[in-house]
Amino acid sequence: MSRLVYELDSPAAVRFIVGANETNATFRFHRIRSGECWNRPNLDEYRQDKMIVVDVEPLDAA
Image (cartoon, rainbow, N blue to C red):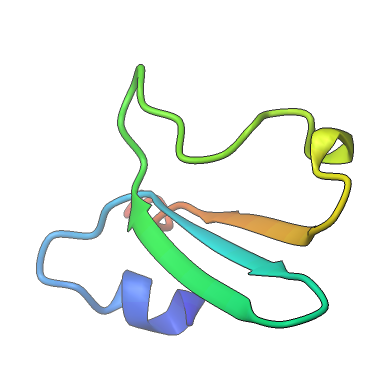
């Protein structure tokens, strides 16, 4: 997935969120923007769900 982020015409920081419980799972991703949060920062607060959050930022061109 991170390779796809790096190949975008205008690379941007992206957050991937996977959540699963006993009956279902979700996969979400969104552009990281200052002031926006799509999940609780403390993942231990999710008692019934298992969460994985991965941030991918574009490589520096320097």
